[in-house]
Length: 264
Ligand code: NDP
Image (cartoon, rainbow, N blue to C red; front, side):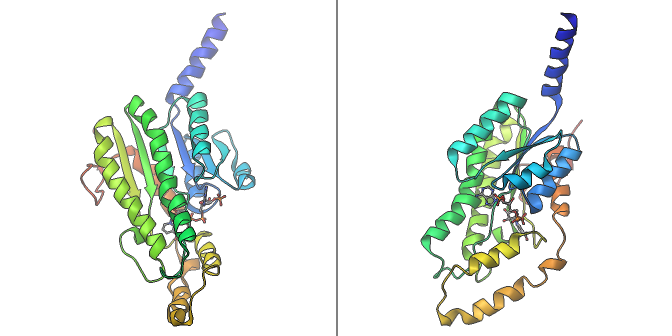
């Protein structure tokens, strides 16, 4: 009787103290590096993506794979319910799942444009809406939205992707002001070029867009913009930032995110 009481107490203590992180797009690139680094630093990580075989290779004591498409609203709700039922808290959300729809604005179909926003914008929003009630209840939490340098500027051929990342910036900045009084931080990481599977997928998608010959100059220029991709830093550099951010205190109105150490 006493022993079982001790086990229950220890289990409750573990549930109460181990930090819990959710990482979307964890099957490759930035999400994979972030999930693995968080797990190595004692977070319990729910690693989410569609390629479950990739996630299963990452499974460990601190990494639990969750098969999920971020456009599936029911799957997102089910995943959050599972996290709360098993771990009872959500400390960090890393919204990262995304891709780049290359192509001239005139030529990318409206279906493809919608899909870009479904994943890169509404996918993030679904997760933010799903975790916020729990973060408000626990009066703490950190939402890290992976945007892009193309959420601040834009380039010909990157219009729909840049629009989606500008939307992530706007939503993040708005949300930061709305939830700061609940003890929740909302932070954007805006990477430049990072060596992952991202660029190769962009060029695969570009092949699905039909451009009239008037756009040949643009089509010839696009590969040159990304020709240094293989020399770009690896995703670990972004994972390091993800690991540090929940420990820092940001002034909610500071869009440049000058970090100051948390007050003891
Ligand atoms: P990768 O292509 O390596 O990884 C993208 C991840 O997103 C994969 O795990 C993929 O998993 C997941 N994903 C894509 N669509 C969905 C979906 N519908 N549902 C669930 N998961 C999905 O690229 P990166 O790691 O480079 O990209 C990560 C983030 O970083 C993106 O938001 C990207 O915009 C951003 N970024 C990347 C830069 C770069 O140069 N690499 C620069 C700036 C920003 P799966 O296919 O298994 O579902």
